[in-house]
Image 1 (cartoon, rainbow, N blue to C red):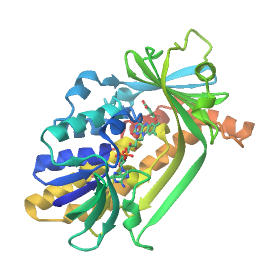
Image 2 (image 1 turned 45 degrees about the vertical axis):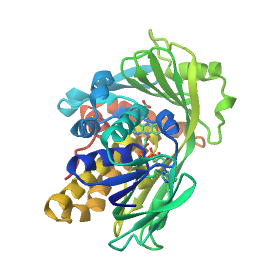
Image 3 (image 1 turned 90 degrees about the vertical axis):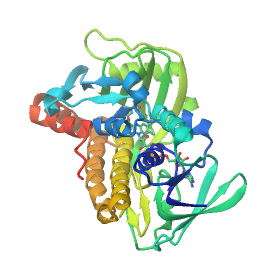
Image 4 (image 1 turned 60 degrees about the vertical axis):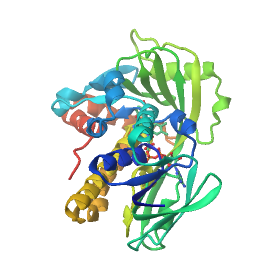
Length: 392
Ligand code: FAD
Ligand code: DHB
């Protein structure tokens, strides 16, 4: 088999890249190690920046998103038993965000790809990338029980944080910067209307809690838990009690409870792999960087990486110039580090430090109060949350 761009991984980064390439006439093949069913039910992100929505519209994949996505004009910060609204349009010159589940984006992109797109192979696991520094890199993969090869002009590793693409960088050709956080998130989906109109980020006495949503009848909530927590050790009533305690305010507000339909624990990590390119191998999305979910940046970063890549491949295809592709790593890393910093700051500001003392807690509250007291500080949060401009 041969193609122009071999894409490893059929998550949002790989699927969107394939769609954008298809529109510009660049052929590609996507290899996804999991089944279609698994890829379509994996619960993850929900908050989309405007640039992410624009990218999906650009490749005509936003029909359902435009019909069902929920436009949000701000978020609520809760601490000290008080609520504070952060008004995005007022603070950013009109910007908003959209709530639409990553799983729905994946479903939409898979459907388009299978209908008229380039090949998308499920249960196709890449096992090695050979000669990434040559003009003809090769991906070895296992599909339908048989080992096969895909000869490419370029390879893009969109294979997430546990993928194999990073391993093809030779020793000394890259560096990874990483930070682990001393807590995890327990996330639930529940069949109950959201108890709020916008997302609530809360620093309760017991730690962080986030109230998000998927639709007018489905809520998505997260709770800070200790590392090593097993989801089944948390019966539903315990989760609701803890959420209610962390969201509690002085005043009239109630957390509605309902049947929990999914429950999982996510560890929190930051890492950045530099550079994001070696020879004719590129990394995009979680394969190159992950951030803790507090700033809602992971999916949005994956999308901005593939927007830059798709433009680079389009320019190469149209004019023969590799100038943009050559700047890929440099163009992406600036944004990646800004998102890494923002996610780190949000995480540190809102979570209880397991080894922290009253002093740490007071500093956190002072940071939160600064944001709610100063338009300048609130505008800085709003600019980062709604998404910094794509530098192209
Ligand atoms: P992935 O989604 O991990 O996709 C990689 C794909 O590659 C997978 O399908 C995998 O099966 C496949 N693969 C792996 N190895 C191989 C191989 N060897 N061969 C073939 N295929 C392979 N981000 C936001 O922007 N906003 C949010 O609100 C947000 N909330 C989050 C909440 C939680 C609880 C979590 C866990 C994450 C959240 N994120 C959020 C982050 C976001 O989900 C990820 O950043 C996003 O999934 C990255 O997409 P990706 O395509 O790079 O990687
Ligand atoms: C969601 C997840 C996040 O990590 C976040 O910061 C906002 C929303 C969500 O799943 O809806």
